[in-house]
Length: 98
Image 1: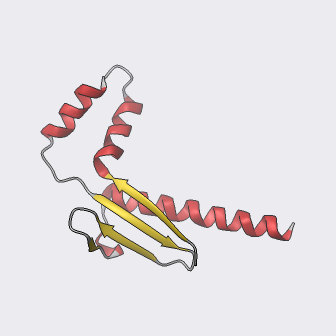
Image 2: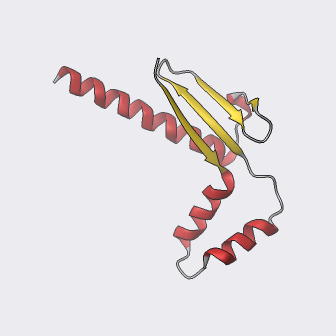
């Protein structure tokens, strides 16, 4: 069984959003803004199995996270990754039959 492992770090996600949304703001300023937010950022590892199942690990606690507990950008990330993997799988099957 093939397993695709992808890591999601919420702080990096928001930093990338801020970098692409504002060319005038330097990295140092973005880091300061994110540090002032004073929140615990999600750090998750997703293990996507080719049979459709997924295992989500919280890298802070090394505990498994149920899919139903994902929220916000972590859930958005999961959905986008799942769609990307489904498309890749379909494309591989199309190429096999061609």
